[in-house]
Length: 327
Image 1 (cartoon, rainbow, N blue to C red):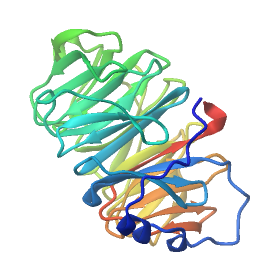
Image 2 (image 1 turned 90 degrees about the vertical axis):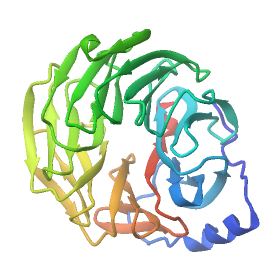
Image 3 (image 1 turned 120 degrees about the horizontal axis):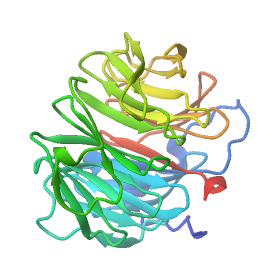
């Protein structure tokens, strides 16, 4: 496990924009586990590393319009979808570079998902493909579909990668697939699911969560593709994050809220007054980090109260959380 997680790559301007003074703590809630958060600061062309109190501890500034990030327990690497850089970047947890994909392999990679053995799946959007990379960012497989691709989510329990395109199709591919393939290689195929903006798999592999932004709903599916339940009346649902018990946090961009849906599809919590929420990351103890794309900030909210409020971003796109207790 890497322990040197407080190495900072600060430019003078970046230090001003995201100095600890820009983090506003609230005197409430229990002290959190000492997690680390990584934020894709899209329009500032960088990855920002925060400590568990929202203080900035590092930057990676060699990306262009990053759109997604992925971590997996036990894998000491952060994977980044460098969207306008047309590549995927693999970083150490202190933001040192491990590997990048070769030039020309990807075109607008928009989402990434790390596997338990350190591979990474990529939604290669413009190339209409889902690409499997090894731990050195070399291509192992390319599966092509009919339209632009959008989301990927690793299913460790079942050894599958769930892949969603922008045409409402969801596929599950064997995690060991190699070479060139197409939709006929899918283990599970579902169609007509709407406009995907978020995809998440329960660690047990029993539930796959899918946000349909056009239909204002979140679908919960079984591993065979059967519909378990639908949570409706969620305005423009975007990113998803699962708690340890399998309940699902949803960033509702249109509703300016984030909400928690349980295994039966009921909304248990609904926290509002957010400015363009697009992604969430649940932390131990019930707190949730939320990305406000329009508000240009990231917040930690616990029990409905803002514990930390970090400013200085420009259209942030994604957040992931490193929990040392899981590594």
